Image (tube, rainbow, N blue to C red; front, side, top):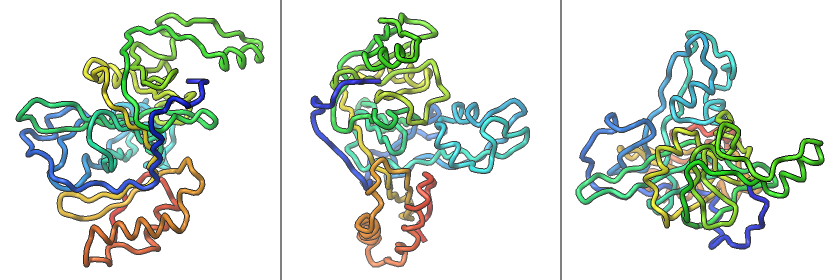
Length: 318
């Protein structure tokens, strides 16, 4: 939700391929099962966290209800369950939860937002002796013509119960519809910012809550990053002012688990040229470089099929 141009972005950072790092992290001192949903210890080997699992829908569940409970967004749950009704899955229906993630190939500090993935990663500071960890949350981002800006910025302010000042573009569009928008929307149930907002050092852009949580996991905002109310509340008090925020566009991710097995994942690209032949060659080359002599683990046909489907599913490299 920002009408302003992007002149103030500190550094344009577009990445079409995310090759996950396989560096060692500090040794773990706790088990992932003890952490809240979406929180993981950084792996000592590989760059993957979490797991895919299934749950059984109750009579009154929608897929969006299930997605919110299990820390995934609209597109994630829809693509993982293409044959399941969004609004009436049906009692007893098995629903796949895409709860496994390949960490972005970026510095593991502060906040990393992958707009292609519709997901935020937060690497909180830990005390000496504590195991490093990552938290990940589904997000909503800017729709066409209001793309969320890319680049490295930082948080500048935290606002509890913020008022919302509709930008001129929204007020103009509302007036054209014959439904004039107010100059200011006070805190409350009608405020689209929700109860918490974190300002970025890009004028007009925020990470904030929402009064329309069904839109999390969609490209529906005017550029701001939306989070479920409980998710923004979870991080709000723990993200210091001055935290680095790295906004990337990485529709292709390659990962390795703790055993060294390779995986590939592709999302719908915002750049229509992202999946050209050069990209295919680069991805296969990166896989083979990591695999060393085991070049049978990467083949052009398999990678091409994954890029064509671009459904966000993590696929083992055969």
